[in-house]
Length: 197
Image (cartoon, rainbow, N blue to C red; front, top):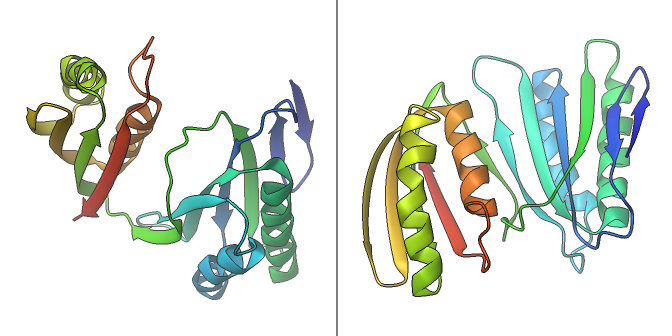
């Protein structure tokens, strides 16, 4: 693993032979830049490309976080386009690029989620009965005890529904855990998230 440092980016280079990768772009800047960024992200990724992700508008700050997953070449194009736009905006704008292991979580092309300090999310986890049962036995520890979230859960064979509330950052961390699944999980479940305030 190689860590590259420059005045504009911090990037961790994952092995390029991994077919799907994950890129996180944390952008700080003017309202005009941040309003334009979702359109830039969608247009930087070809319609045929398999890149998907989400854009979080972070509370009480002039920041956006773009999370994208797809082939490395597609994500490099996206990161380059965002870096060029930020550089054109001047010294008050910045971007931090980080490469991470993929979660294989996103099915849409960059919807914007306006985060508040406190958020709610309805999470539906579905899959084979054994996988969902493994989630059911693990979510209490991860959501309530490890992250301090409020949670209600209900389920049936092959489906688990969670209603969560709490700090937006902790909620995002828990959702990333849901996408990756509990440790030693053999089969990944489908995870659908609906955010609300």
